[in-house]
Length: 200
Image (cartoon, rainbow, N blue to C red; front, top):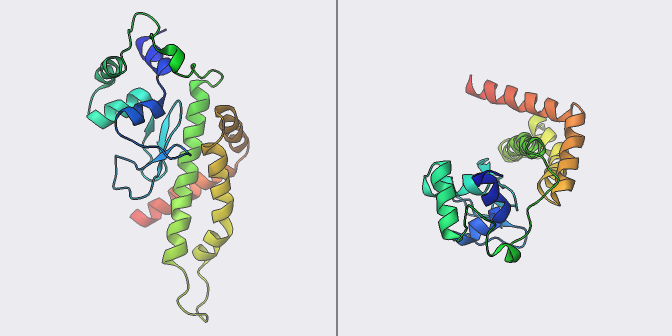
Protein backbone atom coordinates (compact mmCIF):
# COMPACT_ATOMS: atom_id res chain seq x y z
CA UNK A 1 0.00 0.00 0.00
CA UNK A 2 1.40 3.41 -0.98
CA UNK A 3 1.76 6.34 1.41
CA UNK A 4 -1.19 8.08 -0.22
CA UNK A 5 -3.38 4.99 0.03
CA UNK A 6 -2.47 4.57 3.72
CA UNK A 7 -3.49 8.15 4.45
CA UNK A 8 -6.75 7.90 2.50
CA UNK A 9 -7.64 4.62 4.20
CA UNK A 10 -7.11 6.15 7.65
CA UNK A 11 -8.67 9.61 7.19
CA UNK A 12 -11.98 10.56 5.62
CA UNK A 13 -12.48 13.73 3.61
CA UNK A 14 -15.04 14.87 6.17
CA UNK A 15 -12.47 14.48 8.98
CA UNK A 16 -10.01 16.58 6.97
CA UNK A 17 -12.63 19.29 6.48
CA UNK A 18 -13.49 19.33 10.17
CA UNK A 19 -9.81 19.38 11.15
CA UNK A 20 -9.29 22.52 9.07
CA UNK A 21 -12.31 24.48 10.26
CA UNK A 22 -15.24 23.35 8.12
CA UNK A 23 -18.52 22.56 9.84
CA UNK A 24 -20.55 20.07 7.77
CA UNK A 25 -24.32 20.03 8.23
CA UNK A 26 -26.14 16.73 8.69
CA UNK A 27 -25.96 16.12 4.95
CA UNK A 28 -22.18 16.65 4.90
CA UNK A 29 -22.52 20.00 3.11
CA UNK A 30 -20.27 23.01 3.81
CA UNK A 31 -19.67 26.43 2.28
CA UNK A 32 -17.01 25.96 -0.37
CA UNK A 33 -13.73 27.67 0.57
CA UNK A 34 -12.68 27.95 -3.08
CA UNK A 35 -15.25 30.51 -4.21
CA UNK A 36 -17.58 33.06 -2.63
CA UNK A 37 -20.21 30.75 -1.19
CA UNK A 38 -23.06 31.98 1.01
CA UNK A 39 -24.99 28.71 0.99
CA UNK A 40 -23.34 25.29 1.50
CA UNK A 41 -22.58 23.93 -1.97
CA UNK A 42 -19.67 21.58 -1.22
CA UNK A 43 -20.30 17.99 -0.19
CA UNK A 44 -17.75 16.28 2.09
CA UNK A 45 -18.10 12.54 1.59
CA UNK A 46 -15.95 9.84 3.12
CA UNK A 47 -13.75 9.38 0.05
CA UNK A 48 -14.09 12.63 -1.90
CA UNK A 49 -15.39 16.19 -1.91
CA UNK A 50 -17.42 17.86 -4.63
CA UNK A 51 -18.64 21.46 -5.00
CA UNK A 52 -21.89 21.72 -6.93
CA UNK A 53 -21.21 25.39 -7.67
CA UNK A 54 -17.58 25.62 -8.82
CA UNK A 55 -16.90 21.94 -9.57
CA UNK A 56 -13.92 21.61 -7.18
CA UNK A 57 -13.44 17.93 -6.34
CA UNK A 58 -10.89 15.39 -5.16
CA UNK A 59 -9.86 13.24 -2.22
CA UNK A 60 -8.48 14.02 1.26
CA UNK A 61 -5.00 14.81 -0.06
CA UNK A 62 -6.37 16.98 -2.87
CA UNK A 63 -8.49 18.95 -0.39
CA UNK A 64 -5.51 19.58 1.91
CA UNK A 65 -3.29 20.57 -1.03
CA UNK A 66 -5.87 23.03 -2.35
CA UNK A 67 -6.63 24.53 1.08
CA UNK A 68 -2.97 25.23 1.88
CA UNK A 69 -1.54 25.63 -1.65
CA UNK A 70 0.66 22.53 -1.32
CA UNK A 71 1.74 19.84 -3.72
CA UNK A 72 0.38 16.31 -3.05
CA UNK A 73 3.52 15.16 -1.21
CA UNK A 74 3.46 18.22 1.08
CA UNK A 75 -0.25 17.72 1.70
CA UNK A 76 0.34 14.07 2.63
CA UNK A 77 3.08 15.08 5.06
CA UNK A 78 0.81 17.71 6.63
CA UNK A 79 -1.96 15.13 7.13
CA UNK A 80 0.52 12.65 8.69
CA UNK A 81 1.65 15.37 11.12
CA UNK A 82 -1.76 16.89 11.92
CA UNK A 83 -3.52 13.53 12.42
CA UNK A 84 -0.58 11.92 14.23
CA UNK A 85 -0.18 9.11 11.70
CA UNK A 86 2.88 6.91 11.35
CA UNK A 87 3.36 6.24 7.62
CA UNK A 88 5.23 3.01 8.38
CA UNK A 89 2.49 1.30 10.35
CA UNK A 90 -1.29 1.46 10.77
CA UNK A 91 -2.43 4.54 12.72
CA UNK A 92 -2.67 4.07 16.46
CA UNK A 93 -6.10 5.69 16.44
CA UNK A 94 -7.40 3.49 13.60
CA UNK A 95 -10.10 2.06 15.88
CA UNK A 96 -11.57 5.53 16.35
CA UNK A 97 -11.59 6.15 12.61
CA UNK A 98 -13.97 4.47 10.18
CA UNK A 99 -12.55 1.52 8.26
CA UNK A 100 -11.49 2.15 4.69
CA UNK A 101 -14.32 2.10 2.19
CA UNK A 102 -14.09 -0.97 0.02
CA UNK A 103 -16.05 -1.84 -3.05
CA UNK A 104 -15.64 1.10 -5.43
CA UNK A 105 -12.82 1.35 -7.91
CA UNK A 106 -11.13 4.56 -9.01
CA UNK A 107 -12.98 4.16 -12.30
CA UNK A 108 -16.34 4.10 -10.50
CA UNK A 109 -15.46 7.25 -8.54
CA UNK A 110 -14.42 8.87 -11.83
CA UNK A 111 -17.78 7.87 -13.37
CA UNK A 112 -19.61 9.43 -10.41
CA UNK A 113 -17.61 12.67 -10.70
CA UNK A 114 -18.21 12.78 -14.47
CA UNK A 115 -21.98 12.29 -14.05
CA UNK A 116 -22.10 15.00 -11.38
CA UNK A 117 -20.20 17.42 -13.61
CA UNK A 118 -22.50 16.89 -16.61
CA UNK A 119 -25.68 17.05 -14.52
CA UNK A 120 -24.68 20.12 -12.52
CA UNK A 121 -23.48 21.99 -15.64
CA UNK A 122 -26.88 21.42 -17.25
CA UNK A 123 -28.70 22.22 -14.01
CA UNK A 124 -26.86 25.55 -13.75
CA UNK A 125 -28.03 26.31 -17.28
CA UNK A 126 -31.64 25.45 -16.44
CA UNK A 127 -31.60 27.64 -13.33
CA UNK A 128 -30.16 30.50 -15.36
CA UNK A 129 -32.80 30.11 -18.08
CA UNK A 130 -35.59 29.95 -15.53
CA UNK A 131 -34.70 33.44 -14.32
CA UNK A 132 -33.31 35.00 -17.51
CA UNK A 133 -36.16 34.02 -19.84
CA UNK A 134 -39.19 34.05 -17.58
CA UNK A 135 -42.06 36.08 -19.07
CA UNK A 136 -42.57 39.56 -17.67
CA UNK A 137 -46.26 39.76 -18.65
CA UNK A 138 -49.00 37.11 -19.07
CA UNK A 139 -49.28 38.02 -22.75
CA UNK A 140 -45.61 37.52 -23.54
CA UNK A 141 -44.96 34.30 -25.51
CA UNK A 142 -42.95 31.72 -23.58
CA UNK A 143 -39.30 31.38 -24.55
CA UNK A 144 -38.43 27.77 -25.42
CA UNK A 145 -35.49 27.87 -22.96
CA UNK A 146 -37.82 28.88 -20.13
CA UNK A 147 -40.15 26.02 -21.09
CA UNK A 148 -37.22 23.55 -21.16
CA UNK A 149 -36.15 24.74 -17.70
CA UNK A 150 -39.67 24.21 -16.35
CA UNK A 151 -39.87 20.71 -17.80
CA UNK A 152 -36.35 19.48 -17.03
CA UNK A 153 -35.25 21.03 -13.71
CA UNK A 154 -37.02 18.59 -11.38
CA UNK A 155 -35.86 15.54 -13.35
CA UNK A 156 -32.23 16.65 -13.47
CA UNK A 157 -32.26 17.62 -9.78
CA UNK A 158 -33.54 14.11 -8.97
CA UNK A 159 -30.82 12.47 -11.08
CA UNK A 160 -28.17 14.67 -9.44
CA UNK A 161 -29.40 13.67 -5.97
CA UNK A 162 -29.24 9.97 -6.92
CA UNK A 163 -25.59 10.28 -7.94
CA UNK A 164 -24.57 12.70 -5.16
CA UNK A 165 -26.20 11.14 -2.09
CA UNK A 166 -26.53 7.68 -0.57
CA UNK A 167 -23.96 4.97 -0.04
CA UNK A 168 -21.01 4.72 -2.44
CA UNK A 169 -22.63 1.62 -3.95
CA UNK A 170 -25.91 3.49 -4.55
CA UNK A 171 -24.07 6.38 -6.20
CA UNK A 172 -22.05 4.02 -8.38
CA UNK A 173 -25.25 2.21 -9.42
CA UNK A 174 -26.94 5.51 -10.31
CA UNK A 175 -23.90 6.59 -12.34
CA UNK A 176 -23.79 3.23 -14.13
CA UNK A 177 -27.47 3.54 -15.06
CA UNK A 178 -26.87 7.01 -16.51
CA UNK A 179 -23.79 5.89 -18.42
CA UNK A 180 -25.53 2.83 -19.87
CA UNK A 181 -27.78 4.97 -22.05
CA UNK A 182 -27.37 8.03 -24.25
CA UNK A 183 -29.15 10.51 -21.98
CA UNK A 184 -26.05 11.82 -20.22
CA UNK A 185 -24.11 12.16 -23.48
CA UNK A 186 -27.02 14.09 -24.96
CA UNK A 187 -27.01 16.49 -21.99
CA UNK A 188 -23.24 17.00 -22.22
CA UNK A 189 -23.36 17.69 -25.96
CA UNK A 190 -26.26 20.11 -25.53
CA UNK A 191 -24.57 21.99 -22.68
CA UNK A 192 -21.25 22.16 -24.55
CA UNK A 193 -22.95 23.35 -27.73
CA UNK A 194 -24.80 26.10 -25.87
CA UNK A 195 -21.60 27.15 -24.07
CA UNK A 196 -19.79 27.43 -27.42
CA UNK A 197 -22.66 29.43 -28.89
CA UNK A 198 -22.55 31.76 -25.91
CA UNK A 199 -18.80 32.36 -26.43
CA UNK A 200 -19.15 32.93 -30.19
